[in-house]
Length: 264
Image (cartoon, rainbow, N blue to C red; front, side):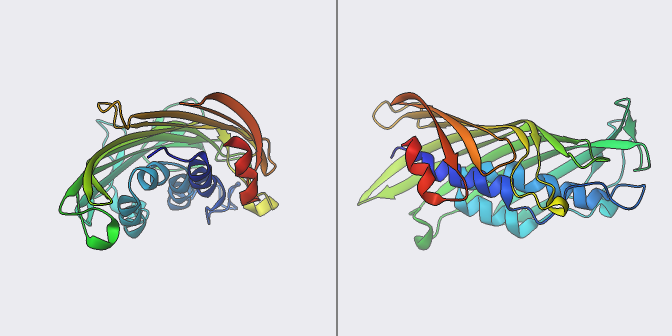
């Protein structure tokens, strides 16, 4: 079934506006690593996980953000590696590194830490349940994310990176079991996250792009879609969508659900 741009816009809206973290410099000279990891999470892998599979998205939310104190540092890789967590048949891993102003990796956070990079993976099998819409089958999930949050010593935390999720399985449509395979990629480019301490709700600048490929081996139901949203600090964003209907651009007010209709 063709994926509605309204659904895609809504999920991306959740990724950019629903973080509980307060973007901005902390009162301490040493950055709060746990808060930074939490700040990155809503705008990264959770979005593509939820798009590809709501069940996987729910499992990811149950896992939460790792405690940096449990993530030992490796001098050979430059990353802090957190313990893996398994939920609903999916195994989640996360590792992160601290970066100073010169681009060097740090063994601990200090007054010179200026950026943080986080790498995550999500792999495993989701068992179907009658209420999930999947019947007598399971979904195989394989996803990864590599994101960097820079400017953490300023009030403009800037996100760059890519998250990709591949999900395959079967979905019941009527009385038929239909194979379903999806690959969803989300790319943040110079996305300045909202500073809630300053009363901001929307990304201040930058772009968030989403690419969807569904059932590429079945020409009857195959779908390819690209959507890009460009932010300017207001709820009104420029949206460009390319799908089987061609390419179209519009302005969408994310504060109003009816605004999505302009991109249909």
